[in-house]
Length: 364
Image 1: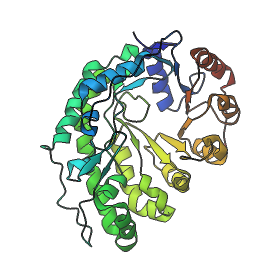
Image 2: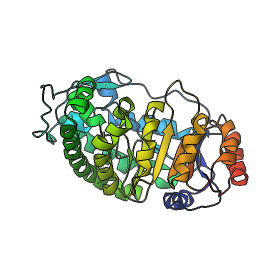
Image 3: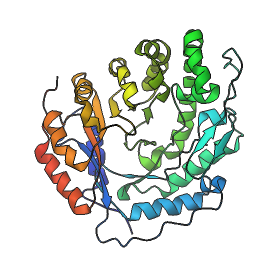
Image 4: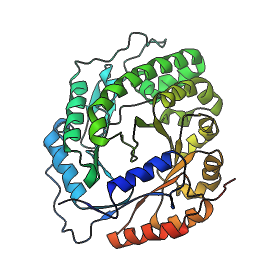
C-alpha cells in the first residue's frame, strides 16, 4: 500500500526546479505531512536486539521505511527519505578513525586529534572501514527501493560538513581553544577536510543519482543535481568575525562544489552569521531554525525578512496555524514551508488555502 498525495511527483519536481531558481509558481513551496486517511494503524517493525543491529540491519531499515511511508499523506512537495538513520556512524570523522559508541537513539564519537597542536595533515578516509563499506550497502539498498512516483527517495546521508567534522576529530572543547590560539591552522584544516568531503560526496552521489534523478540528503528537499544541506553547528559558540575568517572559506568551497545548497542555521545563537551567509553567491537557500525550547521561526520575523531581502530562498518549519500569517508577511517567491497536519483533510485544505494566501511581494 502506497502513500497518498495531492499531485504527481513530476509536478512536485517542476516546483522544486522553479523554487531553486528563485522564481514564482503560484504559491510557496510546501511540504505537508499527515496521517493517511482511512489507514488502519499497525505496530512498527520489531526493533533489533542491539544498538549495532538497530543501525546496520538493512532489512529492518527497509521494513521501517515502508511502515512509515504506507501510513503517510505527502502533499505539495513532500516526500519520504528511504531510512532516516543518522546516529553518526556514517560520517567522515568515523571513516578517519574516530571511535563511535551507539545506543538505540543516537551515537557519540571520541576525538583522535588530541595533541596540543592541531595536526590534521595525516588524516585520510579509511575505505576499508566497516562503516564506510556499510554506507555503500545502505546507499545501494536505498537506490534499489527508491520509487519516485510514490515519493520515496534514497538519501546520500548525513556525513558531516564544515566545522562539525573537525569538532568530532578534535573535540569541541579543544577546538574552542584552537579558534583563539591558532585560527589560521583551523582555517587550513577546514579547507583540507572540505576537499575530502567533496571527494566523498561524489562517490555517494554516484550510487543514488540515477534512481533519484538528482539528490536529497538528511534535509527534506530534492534537487535535480548535487544537493546537500550545509551546516556548522559549532558556529553557535563563536563570534561573527571568527565565523567569517575561519569557517566561511570552507563553506564557500562547499557551495561552489554543489549544484544546490541550503544552509541549516541551527539555533538562535547562530543567527548572528546570517549576514555572512547571505554574501555567498552560490548559496541558494537558508533555513532558520530557532532550536529546541525556542519559539516558532516566525517569532524572528526580522531575520526571515533579511534573508528574503538579500535574495535568498527561505526554508521554515511552521505549525499549520502559522502558515496564513507567514504568507501575509513574507513573499511566496523562494519560500518553502514544512508542515505537519493532524489529518489528511486538514492537509489538503491547507494546500488549497496556501494558493490563495501566497503573494509574490517585495520584502525589505
